[in-house]
Image 1 (cartoon, rainbow, N blue to C red):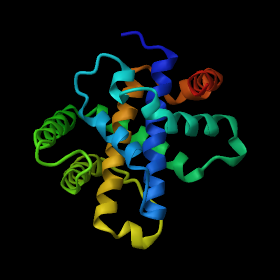
Image 2 (cartoon, one colour):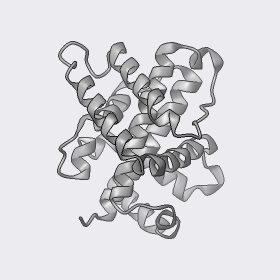
Image 3 (cartoon, one colour):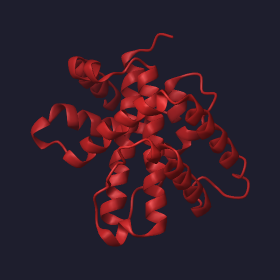
Image 4 (cartoon, rainbow, N blue to C red):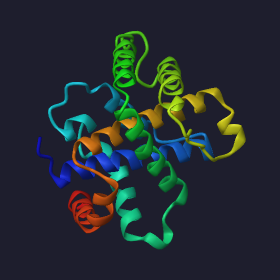
Length: 204
């Protein structure tokens, strides 16, 4: 299937949005709940027809678009931590995509979590816990593990730890989508200007 630079940019921005939220929670114990929901909702849009539908709307991934644009245009002031998380997520996606059994298992378990939404909402503590466990028992076993830096009181809080893992799982979802849209490391390096142009169109 043919995908446009618009599709690729949204998916790449999705990775940046998840990575940025991981950093915020690890360092402050807090992050915008609407931005967290926007990331986690992508895990349950199994039958979306377009990349934009996966994210709900362009507005839902706008924080990630702005972060991606800043990363591409201000290379002297890049956030090294967020860059590290993005690269790690893209590397883990490659391992996951070659493991069909794990991918099937993740999808089945996500559907099981979705079935409980009538009892536990997307942002309920139970949902964060289940998504955190899913990440820990699947993606985290692929190695190398993503080492999240931050303030120890926030990192040692079980709720925050579950949120971080849930967001890393959402980041993997976006990395898989970016790859499906034709994204690659070389394409990212060589197509940097095209991504900047697309970000600027979306931001304006």
